[in-house]
Length: 188
Image 1: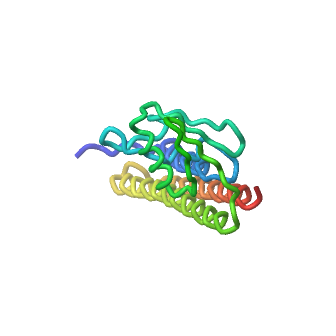
Image 2 (image 1 turned 90 degrees about the vertical axis):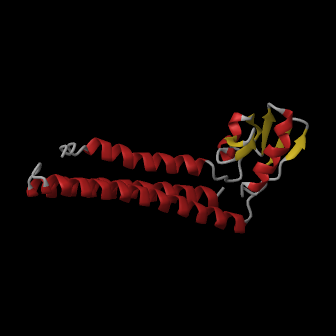
Image 3 (image 1 turned 180 degrees about the vertical axis):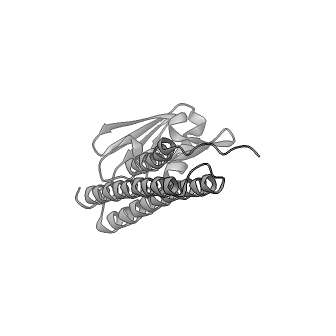
């Protein structure tokens, strides 16, 4: 049987940070009443028989603080882009003008703000779960290393404590990012 690879603390940290980076990216797509091109990042368009990210079928711009535009490169996809934006659950209603879609960004009402904070909390929980899954993988690896006598019980305990601290730090960072996003959504 092949020997287990050594425990890699840096890899665990990189994977946990990846969950935080992904969360920040997802939060960029939550609109807060100002036009931001990243709002449309989660939109996928059925183009040429397969789903494609919006930014691969057109150019997204924010020419004004409360307006986004999408210049669709292929006129035959304009209606598909319009439908994809409407169906994305972002509360946006594009206006189609040839190959250009104008997307006014409406003011957020109280109900929509609450929906967005719930969605942000859901994203944050998914990030916490991802961090905990990395911890679980690391703990399992440490147990196998100890069972195979590759590390001592004391080394296992020390590395497990480090891994738990890393997990706690990343979950704390996720909570801080969520709190900041909630403040941004509720107090625009």
